[in-house]
Length: 341
Ligand code: GZL
Image (cartoon, rainbow, N blue to C red; front, side):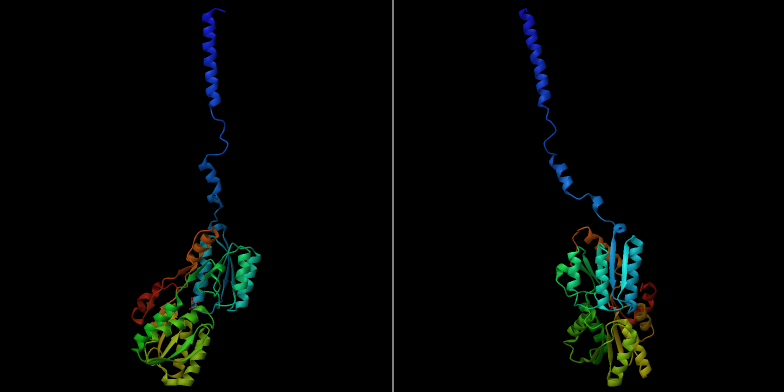
């Protein structure tokens, strides 16, 4: 073979080998996916997150003892309807054992989350632990329970001590700092009763001429409020200058008792109560009630927003306080039309 041909062959061979070499140098499929692809697999796909339509909620309500509770129940039910949440709702007729039974039933049905308004503060640790062991978060709504913080996801409700302080300040105003007061207490052992009593006493502690001469539970109902006020009138009669009622329903019952006794509620006996339901605004317009401290029952929207966050593993505050005001007779007529409960 002539030298020129040999050289040509060598050049061609070298060229072919160098091309194949580049091809061989092309990387095979990488041994592992690039970091960003690997990271994507580590996070749950957004489709794994529940929506309101996926949510199954068990709600253990206290009962139907007051206008406030009726409005609270309406808010919980109406918001579930609006959002497409599957709501399993129980009314415990103000009995703790019925609320505990309802919670156990929700656990057996494997709901996503349990909402409860504890009728009293104590006696919840066992059943809340059962919910935790079943992997079902508990949300306290309206009233608190005295349990370790790891047994509930969050508390959505009012600052009842502050409501008591506001009632004390209002009583100071309507009595002009001086008078004998009888007190209608809410459900014995309940957070609102314990704390409204505490806040009121904190406020009048440095008011030497304001004295609580009697205190008894009316269980947050009109009927019991009337009955206990009748007993107060029998014992103290015209010595009573004012009534502090832990809710408007008991105050409205007491108003009936005061009128039947022959005295003028709102004048002979000043009255300060809590909730700010429509019945209280009507009593203020009639001159029979001197102040109502608001306690917001319309917790449905915030409750489901918290429930979805908790079920999807999002961070929520341990306490979500409600926004509330204080109302007097002079503004009652103008405000009544816009009151939602
Ligand atoms: C307060 C709520 C109380 C209301 C009452 O948040 O728990 O229970 O003040 C109701 O009217 O019965």
